[in-house]
Image (cartoon, rainbow, N blue to C red; front, side, top):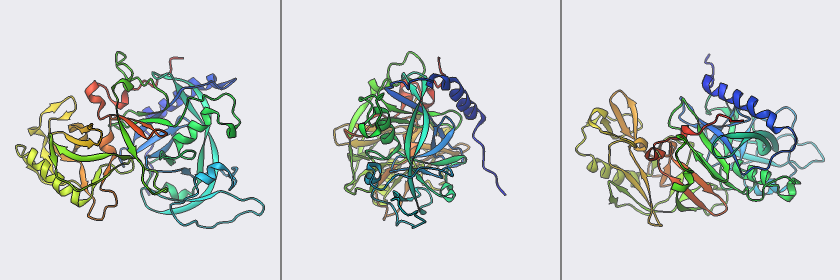
Length: 422
């Protein structure tokens, strides 16, 4: 019998310290806040990412997901089927699996498809209260209460998640039901919430900064800048952002974020490709390409690196190198950069730290995977390619502010100071 691996002791101690040091600050009237902050952990077994709610409860981050879902407590209050948060979530991923419905109350019931296992299940929608830290952009400052829309999933829904995860947090493009959307509505004090202490300027804007290490957390921000990282002399990271338009799928049920792209380039040379789109995903570890995109891309990369001796392939990667033949730079191995060319004339540049993955001693492989000719989306940008990138999603305005790698600024996503100064 196998036993779940516990969270690293450093992260457990961090959560306990944060909760105990900030909880007294929530007594009395809840403060008006401009931003909230939470740590992001990279799981060593799955290379997936979880966000800590209530300081230590880990939820898988699903950038393409509509809901937050996981097992509910024994007693909970289901949402009525006519509530706005039920209406916005009216489309389901799978057929509803009918269960017992008490007479006299119309429950909001939804179905979900597990992003890792593909399994379908149904559950009632409810509101779950949480505490989450507010921030001045440099440190956590106090704990504030909020709630999120949760779909009450069975215990079996935890299969395939990182060890210790208690559910999945959807960060997809919604107005009311994804985690960032619900937090924004809750903190802003919209009328149907009957809150008088909210902040009207707090809207559906969030930032993700995925860690490249399993030993220290990255960070998620909800709300307004500033966003500061160590060392302390660095200015607000938002000063360095490049902005691009986010595209939306014509399918209402697809709440993922898509880049508005016109092509790829390797070492500054454009790759001849058919028309394609790029989806952002945190539930696949490496960028996956349709075969018609992957083959010309991999050939272009082979040509650009023909001076580097190859090593045997290591699944799931095709092109591998002897790291003793690679130089080292501030942004990773000294290999040709890969540009995602955006339609506004800007580039998302992937350097060595996000293109080559160490797989064993003296071997690193190009971390892009052939997804087959029938892959639905031409390119899905995976978590590894977004590690130590700063990504600011402005959902109402459909824009993405991005820094492809913080390493160029001599910092990383694990350099937010989670120590409370209060």
